[in-house]
Image (cartoon, rainbow, N blue to C red; front, side):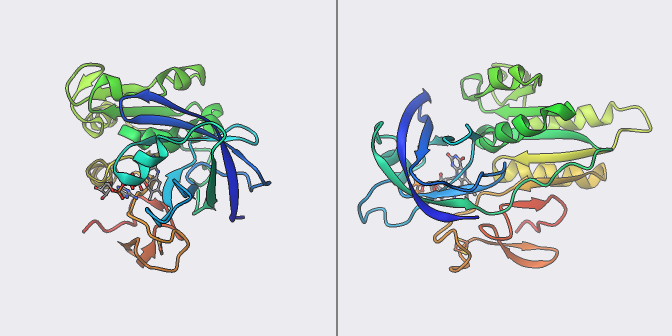
Length: 258
Ligand SMILES: Cc1cc2nc3c(=O)[nH]c(=O)nc-3n(C[C@H](O)[C@H](O)[C@H](O)COP(=O)(O)OP(=O)(O)OC[C@H]3O[C@@H](n4cnc5c(N)ncnc54)[C@H](O)[C@@H]3O)c2cc1C
Ligand code: FES
């Protein structure tokens, strides 16, 4: 169920430079979001910027919920200045969600940078399956939610581009090494991933090489978020699909990267 609702800001806390954790209290009853769903958030009650901005559900707190975001441009800069007690207009929850696990698969979650925003929410719902988590960022300061993962019993395998924590390099290479080290017959893995485009492309190649199944959450520029403008389409093996309606979560082998 998705609908227009208002929510008041409980907290809008800077967690590291340019990154904020926004806690919102819906003023109406909303459908419980599932990991992978997103909200279109109006960053201000004025006409500029006119369009709402899409953000993944980070954590569902029972009735309140959180968004983890980075200041990328005008909209998110305005959002970062919203204060407790301010009211935001929101549509959601929108889009599909990470599908449920087939029990004979071992889950590998892969997060790149702020891709951890939906992946932590996913981890909270599937930690009973003891998933593995591979998590990469540019530098150790940009690794968020490590304590939260550990408190869920998930010890993430980490990499940073600058080598300041974990392995130096990108997380897909680290995952490749792990997969290559598995003795035959390897477990049946299922990937659940979110991160920047280049990471997802490399992960798709890896999935082909190792014949892995999995799901990726895409981030595409969005105008309406409701399936009407066609501004967010991606090419797939099943034709063009709207990230905001048929996605944002797609089977990893379905997306045709252009
Ligand atoms: C389904 C979905 C979930 C998302 N979840 C999160 C999240 O949890 N946390 C978070 O910080 N961001 C998330 N994003 C990205 C976020 O929507 C954009 O960063 C935001 O809309 C930028 O708005 P702006 O006005 O600040 O920037 P703009 O001034 O509009 O643009 C600034 C820069 O950001 C880029 N940008 C704009 N929109 C997007 C987009 N949708 N995806 C990627 N890059 C974009 C532009 O190309 C430009 O380079 C998500 C996007 C989608 C589609
Ligand atoms: S953003 Fe308009 S169709 Fe997806």
